[in-house]
Image 1 (tube, rainbow, N blue to C red):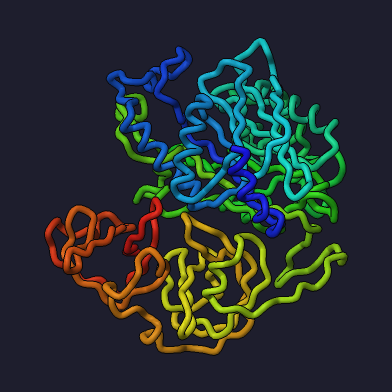
Image 2: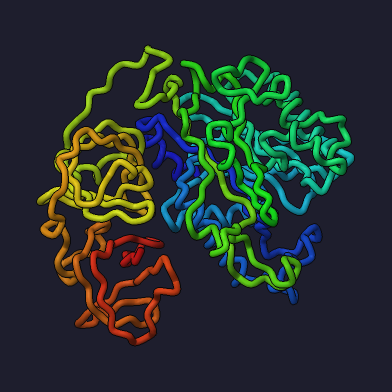
Length: 517
């Protein structure tokens, strides 16, 4: 583990920015019987918690995490270190290396809080809200980022099947600890409380056994006089909840029979909004909502079991929670307004270098200030765009594509690079100049046979013909390539001859594939 960390250390010293996420993965149990499992997760029984379903659960959860690209990941509902290690190994297959891990283990509960990190873990503690009860321990993990320490408190409070007084115990344990901590910290995880719980609780006699006092609002102090604490007003002793950055209709990570609520949280102290230590990157908070986490009716595609969730495992689905994430930096905090307004003016202007796309594949992932000139958007679908210049390589842009139009030529500033499953991609950019519409035809690859699939990833092929057999496209002289259909219903029949146009080359588990969006 030490040697693996040393390989990645130079990247972090260069980037200065990192992503923190939290994800309740809904019961990731291992395959060893320990006696504390839920009945349907006792391994190798009629409920079907076996090697096949365990591996499928790992693969599905890893897909979410790999697409989200966290550098630090808080987790809830992990049974054991064995389960955490299995997830850690599965993530490495898709290029997300989180070599440092910690898990709460001082109290016997069916599921626990855990954390994975790219950065070195320098300290681990556990907070026990009530030694006499089965309330889950809070995991306290301190990591070091570019010489700066930040402590993460990973929470999984009592579910709403129990009264607020039980969640108050967990909140008090956290509040007492953070009042004594000197370095920066982040409170995150599944608090089983809405962002405005101090209002919601007044409508539930069953939950409200505290005369309206709530753990998230009154103990962690995310409200003052019934009003939420926004980041511009957060002061010593109080916290701000990052859900406040989004419109109220988008503040949810859990959907219980149509009732949407924000049970998962990232909560910050005022020290995350200054010019020292670690700071939040303004407006970077989001719930992670790729299409595959939802059913056709809009419901969250949770891990599926028969008999309304109490029967046999069906081997499909993800979790009943959406993950959430936010980005942080070791630079001073800056409020964004329109383009970007700097609160702390101590940052010097950064000189940008003009390079070719091919040069980006030689750069370390992370924050950068690089200019690409006259690149054309040759592909744009879903959350992916691909850009390319004449005589140059292609590169994918992930998510930050709203300012790009298909077929347009641009000068752009690349502000962040990420290495995804071994493939370099741009995750943050700024358009400097739009030169208008161009013909993308000359920039497309004409023949798959002339492409080095191991090297020419992210290229777009104008036309591919072949025969579909068991997930592969056979396109002549024994050549074949894996096909991935984002819409499974569009997959052809086995043995059918197909033609694909303007299809991109992607990678999964270190092997190239054609992606049919």
